[in-house]
Length: 491
Image 1 (tube, one colour):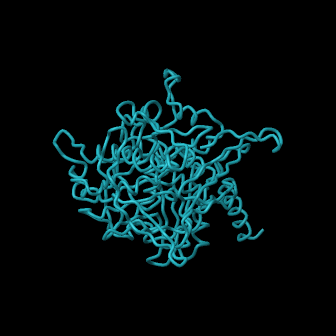
Image 2 (cartoon, one colour):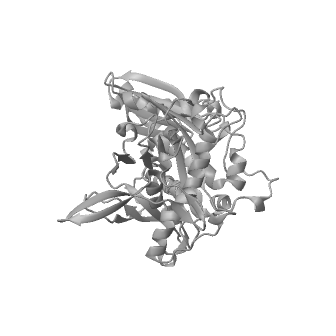
Image 3 (cartoon, helix red, strand yellow):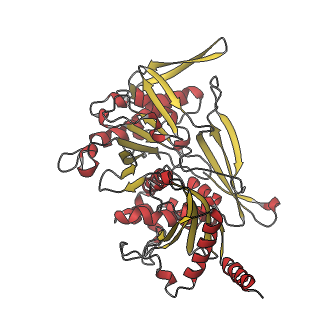
């Protein structure tokens, strides 16, 4: 055997120690790893791992020098994948691919493989959002956390949360207990926001308040998360039960603006012990400030969808103090903004137009999504290959119609298990820009998500192609043959 043949056989054998990884799976593992500027100077090409996914590799093209390189990642002390080796200035993609596969092989031979990723800046203990000590009274766990923890169909969400949790939660000593016991929805909303901002390309820090400080080259802003919850007393505790279209319109025109308004104005007016508002605190001061809101005031169940799937249409009119009327003129859709009256419900009255309230000029925008739920984490996990083999996931929903004369959304239906299925964290995200903002965002600051504006008394929106309005996910557990499949849950 010639020397060249012998080396080729050795290389093939060592390459057998690594395998390709999908972009969706790599994204879940490495969500917190990328730095914002790297997206501007490099193009990711292929992804790799060892058989047990203890090591990850990525091949990239350097957009500045037009050459190639690779990076190797391993888990740090608390379970986050982080870079432990990098090679650049390689002449072509094939050479870089051989390099990362060889590097994975050599790393597997390291007697200290389990500690290769330790970086001396982590908290001392491993971290797992889903770990419940044996001493805990499990009957006191939040019912949604128990669903997440125990239902077989939630395996994809569990896999995703194990990867996201170590990046977000260690900065807050109460995060885990609140997630598991009393504030599951609120903490899941923060986990969703973190994943979405990371996907959009921002580096994130977590000051004491607001919740997030987001940075990218040429851009910096802060975010405070809030949620709409059920009212336990006062006029809003008497919740309407709309049955007819007229009752639903009344519900969305008055009750829901009060619910959104209660959460938003409490954040607008909140001050710390030094009398400082969110936009006045330390390193977060004098930057664009976003309030991110989600509606959890009626939880979803196996029989009913949650309120967030249908209440979002009340947010726009409340924020801008106007509703949109429309008519067709010679086949063309004409829309106009009409000033709202104040919002009334059972003797309670609030003014319309959050962005017209005193102090609201400090809020650059309000961000909303109805996707900060377990269903979203499940679908992202399924797309990344974490679905259990005996479950199928189907998604139906409505999306914006790109026809400028359309007045109703498009309906879609998708099999999430399909290998061609793709989804982004930010698909359902909507941002409402404040026309009176002291620190406004440029329209291109949030490219790729749905954006709403109100300028000179007129509304307009920027909507990505097939932008999602709302969706529902059905999980089927397969029992025996497919004829006996059972629907596990609807969310």
